[in-house]
Image (tube, rainbow, N blue to C red; front, side, top):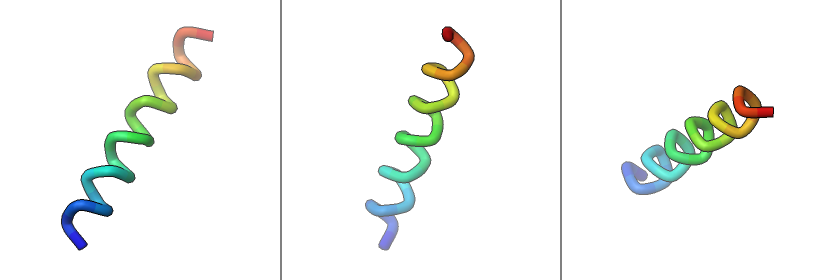
Length: 22
């Protein structure tokens, strides 16, 4: 499931950006 891995990676990056900006 390469797509799932990409989605998970994208979500984790988004979460990191969100946490860092707050």
